Amino acid sequence: MAEPGIIRKLDENVVNRIAAGEIVQRPANALKELIENSLDANATNIIITVKAGGLKYLQIQDNGTGIRHDNLDIVCERFTTSKLQQYEDLQEISTYGFRGEALASISYISHLTILTKTAADKCAYKASYENGKLKGPIKACAGNNGTQITVEDLFYNVLARKKSLRSATEEYSHIMEVVGGYAIHNSHVGFTLKKFGENTDIKTSIKSTVVENIRILKLFFLKLDPRNVDVNVHPTKHEVQFLYEEQIIDKIKSCIEAKLLSCNSSRVMYTQARLPGATMVDEIIKKTTDGAKIYAKDLVRVSSDTQKIDKFFQIASKRNENETNNAKETEKIVSEEIKDKPIVQINDEASDILENSLIEEPKEIKGKEKWNLHTAVEQANITYIDPKESFKTRTFKYERVETKLTSVKQLREMCEVAKQMTLLLLSKKEMLFEYFSLEMNADGELLALPLLLDGHTPFMGALPTYLVRLVTEVNWDSEKECFDTFCRQTAIFYSQPNPDSIQETQKSEEWKQEHVIFPAIRRNFLPPNRFVTNGVILQIANLSDLYKVFERC
Ligand SMILES: Nc1ncnc2c1ncn2[C@@H]1O[C@H](COP(=O)(O)OP(=O)(O)OP(=O)(O)O)[C@@H](O)[C@H]1O
Ligand SMILES: [Mg+2]
Image (tube, rainbow, N blue to C red):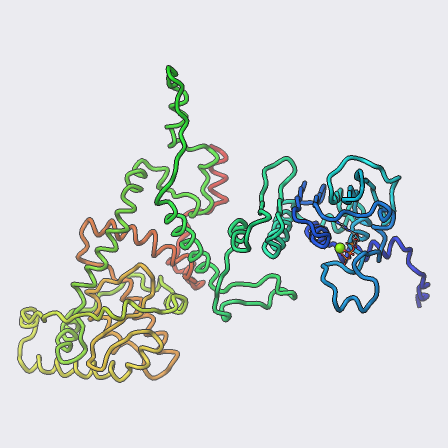
């Protein structure tokens, strides 16, 4: 059996370095401590400069009280503080700091330098520290009132930690978060954050308000139904996960777009007047007018969001021009469709319509499986087509019936069947409304339809068939089956092509497909595995193979 290990007291430096690792896990933690010190010293202006995400260099300059030069020898020792004297003081403490540990911790894991001047001092003093102790003599030098603390080579002696920090960019984004947070909560203090030798990334003014700071920092608040947020992903709730993330991003995108477009209504442009007698150089004209040039690096398309493939075809420019027109056109056509086509009233008159649908052979939808109906309906969070806009009745085309029906008896039978169907739908009225937002009033008038896809109005000519199929194809006896079959029928209705479509409407169809249907498929479509083998989905190309092909070119 192995001998028990001998227990020894750890070396003070080891203890301190371990303790330091707990306080400072990444550059942003060190910066947080330094900002708090500056705020505790009543600074009104704080400038932060960062190199390599703070791992190489992190400097904070404030205009606070400064540190007394006779305190500089102990300021980086553990448990030295000017903020707390006895335990009871903790009850009334109004400063961020009180432990006297932050500077000590940082000095154990980096090269730390303090340059400070109090208002009473004639000059500034500079001192460097290592493992909590002064590294050399304190030097008098020039400097402004306040304190400048420089942290270099953070984690130089904690290699495991250094390796675990992945990228300078990520560290910098944490630093931005920290600075942003303190800037919002301390709007009376001016904050500046910049990378060494570059322009500022954050700059707030001493006089700014909280709201102004929020604007500068480009933060926004999201109000979400708590049921759509999963908070159980991080012990400190520092991170949460959004359900329906894509939809939320889309919403944010469109909000920002709308805001940006609305502030575009007036704009002041300053132009440089040409010197008299100067002539335009051809080269400059070419440079400024040849906007259409596409650089080789932009020819790789890895996401459909960044650029469209149309751009690489000749017709691209034409199409783009048409795009906004198309949007308007679609809107017009859709509203006209709603105005003219619906012919539904599920009462006596409506029986005619139901009949009409019975006579017509229901159209077989090709590839109806291609739409995962459940997902579509569930995720679309069924809402209304404007409920105020009830669909008006249209006169029934008797001529058509006459040609198909031979006897009055047959016609009567049809009417009877239609009435029965109407009654069945009416008996499910409450349920249809509650589950699917399919609304009808007591008179049997249809008021609202489930809306699967915002921006896509189904072909209203297929509405009667849809209603008939709700009666004949939906299993009303079992709840699960009912959901499944109702969703299927609704999806079939939504995917009906418009047989009357003329060339113009076809264009708007194309637009709809690109901007409404395909994005929705990307978000909501969960293809079952069998689609891969039964040929419903065919792989045409994949990105890595394409790269290989283009590399050879
Ligand atoms: N920017 C600064 N301006 C003026 N004094 C400072 C500044 N930074 C540090 N000090 C002085 O150094 C002392 C030690 O700072 P340190 O951050 O280590 O401890 P603390 O702020 O007192 O407590 P905590 O460890 O909880 O932050 C402070 O109590 C303060 O007197
Ligand atoms: Mg502190």
